[in-house]
Image (cartoon, rainbow, N blue to C red; front, side, top):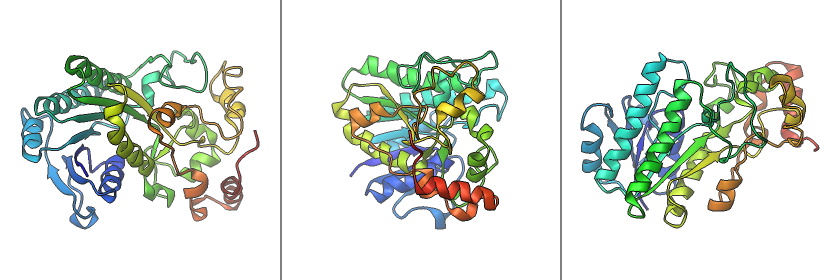
Length: 321
């Protein structure tokens, strides 16, 4: 098994990634500015608290821990949660600092987290894609500092891959709206409302085009990606999402209500089809998400009897195409 250095290991996604990789037998070094309480740290995980923006800190830690792989998750993770210049500077500097330091010490596999927001949906100026479902060929059109910083993170691994050739393997991934395990139990999501509320009111999930992914499925994806990196093209980017949409009605019906002009584009999103394709990860890596809101959402997390019936019906069967 590998020694894996995970930045942002105390974050919403990071906690599940660290736990998932440790459960698969990897030796995990979790690095974050904030520490996870010792009683919540998975057995065998080494925790390091550090400011990776401090000069030389990433290089020092990597030399001390000698990992086989680096997974870079650390970032300001919510658009507009800080001034735009702070988000841009923090996220781009973190990505470059970690990826360049890992390259300098000769780490053989380097992965960075990106975001579906690089595509530019939600732009105040309006946005429509060339087609649905969205995939890695959809042109990026970032319109805020967060999305731009994530596109630069992707370009950073591609730049290093171009310089290193086949000596070091690089990849980027775009996790959809991350759902952590406690959120299936009713804890607030990143936007402050619950999953039951997102399902009951499509307007809450519409800004993200109804995308989502279970954080544990991301951990499974990363485990498989690290295994397959030597045999796939260098510098690849992958969407990582659930196999369905976070909605109780087909997106062919919902999308035109929230994305003007998308009637024809979204007509093929029937049944439970999501707006984001994971075909590349399925075909190139053999990865398949195993969790859905239909299997994971607990009935008691719903808001009232009417919504409970709605979610229970959704978790019992998939919508017909």
